[in-house]
Length: 177
Image (cartoon, rainbow, N blue to C red; front, top):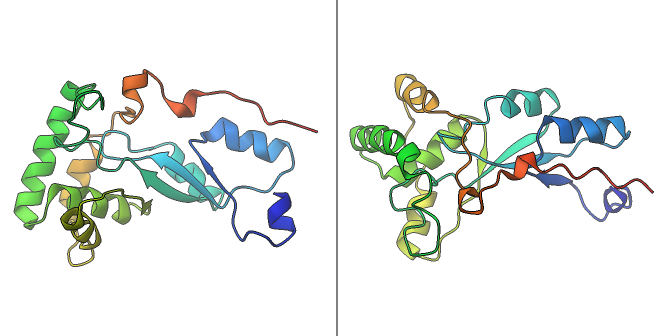
């Protein structure tokens, strides 16, 4: 906040803040963050946080948007097998819609996040995947398919499942000086 006040930064962002964290910021008389980075994919659709952030003019930013892919974190020790059963239905729906639209499943997931109003963060070191991740502006997901993907939401966090945690559940009070 102080860096913003001094003009050394334009925007303030937070990560994994849920409603109670933002209410704590408000109660402390601090400005709302400009953005909140959250785990966001069809199984973790942030149905409560998305409208709440919108009401507070907080931009939603998605991470782990590809967590429902069958190819996500498949190497030993990466934890992709955790929640595998939870992801099975989503994977079939994603495959069907991606095939219908003639796009990759990753492209479908990124576009889904964008069409739901999220800025979507991706990570890859593979040139072909990087190119594919950028190729999400030449198609739209029809409303009936968006609805199919939206109904997969279980408010289930996958990115941190291997550590058996949900970072939005962490309760560390604001430090007051």
